[in-house]
Length: 250
Image (cartoon, rainbow, N blue to C red; front, side, top):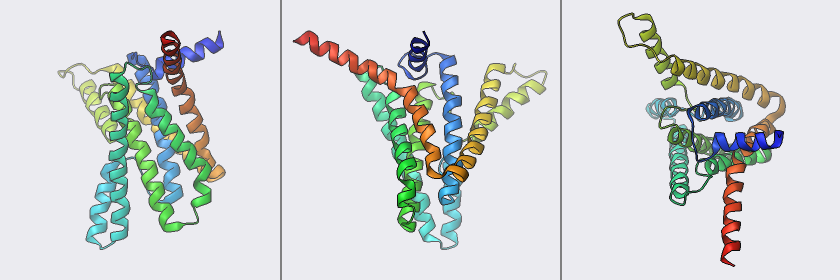
């Protein structure tokens, strides 16, 4: 029974059929992971990699100050985030056209694989200072773009997990409705979701920073394993369907 429950839980969180509770649970998990990656990545290379607003603002300042090498690092982060979101969208559309169970699970498995590579190989390439910083910023930004696109698509843009500016803004809007008696009634369920997303991002950030401080790059391995556990069952379902169809043709 526990095994069946775990399998069904994975299908419910990352499978093709979506429910609002599953979207919200997955969103909170991904917000935690994004917070951990963002904070741990900062300790690794002194660059945040999830919020493009801060990166673009920093690029403008650095350009004005003549810090052109840092402008290039920021630009590489921006492009990598964009490419991650693009790849995620292409994978979702490819799976959707073929009616696959792994419509949303496949991008998360790619994210898990990239995090695992960072956790296992980061310490080995950290000695190459210039290359290492750029490569790490690009990798983590790509991961964040990948993740943000998939949660945006599966939740119909209700949930975003890699930055909390919009989340805090929406919390303020809902609190304004709550405090104004003649305003439209606040969506209390959405307010709870937004608060949980912000909290999970913060707790993830603390966990990622402490993990990197004490464990180094291997602190990302549990995050990768968690994502693999969440995404592998829908992908296995697609593989089993393929094998069944192939055996029928014979």
